[in-house]
Length: 291
Image (cartoon, rainbow, N blue to C red):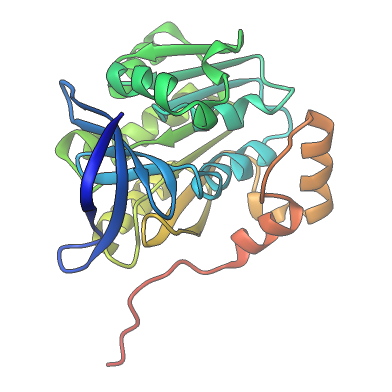
C-alpha cells in the first residue's frame, strides 16, 4: 500500500463539462496494463475502489447497488437460468451475483484484461467474495467480441448474457460491443427463453450513445425494458437495458420475484420484489427541454 502525503483527490469526469472530486486516502495498487491504467485506492467516502483510466468502476460502499441492479432483474426474469455468460466484470462482483442463484450450473466470465482480474483477486476480496474459486465459474481472459463469435461457431448456448463493460462512449473498442450486429450475435447464442442485460452508460449526459445502445437492442429483441439506478460514486444514475426473446421483466409481480430468489437461495442487500417493481416503473433520466 502506498500512503499519500496531504490531500489527494480523484477528478472523476461525469461529462465533458462536469466532474466529481473524490478524496483518496491511500493507493493499494497502480499498474499500466496492455489496455488501461489500473488503480485500486482507498477513498474517504466509498472505501476501497477500482479505478480504470481515471474512472471509478466499483467501490465497497455502493457496488451492490450497481451489481445487483445489473444482474438480478435479468436473472429473476429467466425462469431457470443455468448457463450464464458475463462479458467484462473483472472485479468479480457480477460473477458473485450470478453464482448466488442455485439454478446456475456454469458461469463463464470473459474479461480482456487479466491484470484487472488478478489485482481484484488480491486487493478487493469483498467484491468477488471467492466467486473466482467457485467450481461453476470459468474465467476467460480474452476479447469478449471474439469469444462471442467463437461461441457462435461452436454452437454454444446460454440462458442469460450479462454485459458489464465499459461505457459505450468510452472507446472505439467498447463501441463495437454495443452495435446491432453484436446484439444479433448475442441473440444467436441465447436459448429460446434467453435474456440479455447491458449497462448502457448515462442517458442524461450521453443521450446519443444511450439511444444508440437502445436502438441496437430493439432491433434484435421483441421485449425491451429500460431502467436506471443511482450510483453515488459515479455521481449519476447508470442506465440498464434488458432484451428478451420471450419473458418480460415488467410482467413479474413482487411476490414472484421474491419466490424465485428464495427458491434459488439468493441473498441480496437491496434488490427484492418491491425493488424490481420500482426499477421497472422508474423512467430513465434525460435532460428536460423547456422549449
